[in-house]
Length: 137
Image (cartoon, rainbow, N blue to C red):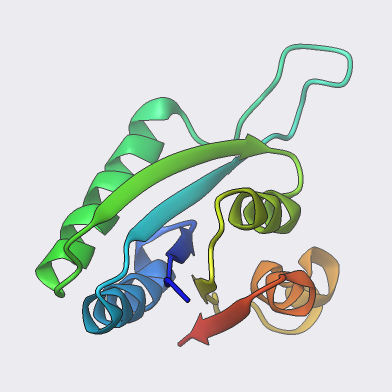
C-alpha cells in the first residue's frame, strides 16, 4: 500500500509537534505529506460568511508548517486550506477523497469545562476517520 500522510494543523504552537512527527514519518516511508488547515466558518447563515482567520494568517501558518516539515526530512510536501463549519468532518472528508492512509494531528491544552464545551477535534478525527490517526503531543 502506498502511504499518503495528512497533517491537520490549526496553530503554530501545538501543531509544531504534529508537523515534525508527520514529516519524520513521511521521510521514513518516502511518502507524500499534505499539510492542511481548516479555516472555520462561524457566520454565513443569514449574512456573509465569517471565517476565523484571514487569508494572510492561513498562508503564514501553512508556509511555516511546510518549511518545518521540509527541515525535518519530508521531501514531497504540499499544502491546502479547507473552509468549513465542522473542522473534524472537513479533515475526514478531505482524507477520504484524497486517499490519505494516515492522519497526524496535534492536540491543544484545553482542560476541564473548555474541553467539555468545545470538544476535541483530534478525538473526533481519531474516532471517525477511515484510516490510522496519530495524535501527537
